[in-house]
Amino acid sequence: MNRTLATLVAAVTLLAAASCCCCCGGLDPSDWDWDIVPTLIFETPAPPDYDTPTPKPTPVITREPAGDLGAETELLLETTIVPVRDLHELAIRLRGLPADTERTVNPGGSPDYAVGTRRLFHVSNVDTDEQFDIHAILEYKTEHVYMWVEENVRFDQDDLSAAADLFEEHTYTTDRTFFGSEWSPGVDNDPHVSILHARDLGNSVAGYYSSADEFVSAVRDDSNEMEMFYINIENVTINDSFYNGVLAHEFQHMIHWHNDRNEETWINEGFSELAMRLNGFDVGGSDWTFASNPDTQLNSWPEGPGAAGANYGAGYLFTSYFLDRFGAEATQALVGHVENSFASVEGVLDELGAGLTYEGLFADWIVANLLDDPAIGDGRYGYDDIDPPSFDIETSYYESDYPVSQSSTVHQHGAD
Image 1 (cartoon, helix red, strand yellow):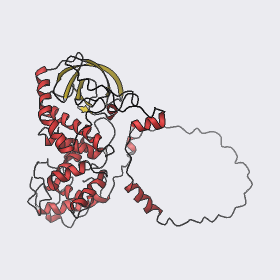
Image 2 (cartoon, helix red, strand yellow; image 1 turned 30 degrees about the vertical axis):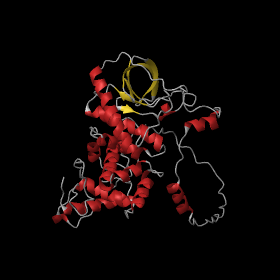
Image 3 (cartoon, rainbow, N blue to C red; image 1 turned 90 degrees about the horizontal axis):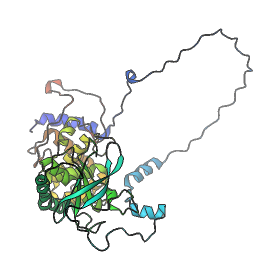
């Protein structure tokens, strides 16, 4: 969508707020519940007699100057990299697991399950955090894919087979070529990726990946001990574009865990949404959700079922913009960069010699979301390969209104 240059000026004005302001939520007294305790009136008693105390001198408090401690603490927080959370090592150090505990199972080789195999799985409801066990049947397999379906669940065999073949022939290769390889043959010594279709995984979820499955059960007793992800068969239609996109999305998480375990959620999820696009599948509308809620902090991730819709869209559009602007090689460098979050973004920009900070890139991205016109300047204010939705604008101004000023609030790394 094209926008006028006058709109660009307004966008940059809003951008200044987006870069440096945080949102402070107010409290509305009408939303409070008041418990009213009556004051009972009795006969007023005579005041007691007290001796007036002798006032004591006010002590003198000497405060040492803060010096550079605050700046040093800020720098420490900015530069500290959270170490990889290796559950295997933690179990040895903290739980007394024997140091020689193997990281894999099936030492004799791949189990190479036959179609018709029945197996127990540990699964979770993402909305309630409830864990429970089910049995599933291996209904179809390819060279690299097992398709498991919960027992007594109805499904279309032709659709399941077609989806598995598409994943084998297209998605598996596309994701691995762009993002890297999953751990293979992995914890189960089996090159197959297991895709489990089950019920009761949560109303707000289409699928999920759990890194707990990458560890032996001696480390995580809820591990299924295989490279796998889960599909909520109640919320998808097998082999439609969104379903196939979810497979691409979850497979990227599996790959990312193997290559960059301590990456922050927002950028990991952004790349999983990008995986859906790279494979040519429906991304599910997260970009539209973000366009309706642009005051969403890019580098954050909210808790709670269904709370992150706009965050998925923000991550998707940011990684798509990065790919459009800097190309596949630079984006692949970002995927596996040793730094995390904005530090990894800035690290890649430095390696490219872009002469740009992450804050400058964020500013360009905000304007590109509003204007989407790559014909402006050097093309940085638009997208080449996708057509993002139009963003909601809270207030519009016209040339006759200027000069104008407005005070408001916005999340850090958000826009309004």
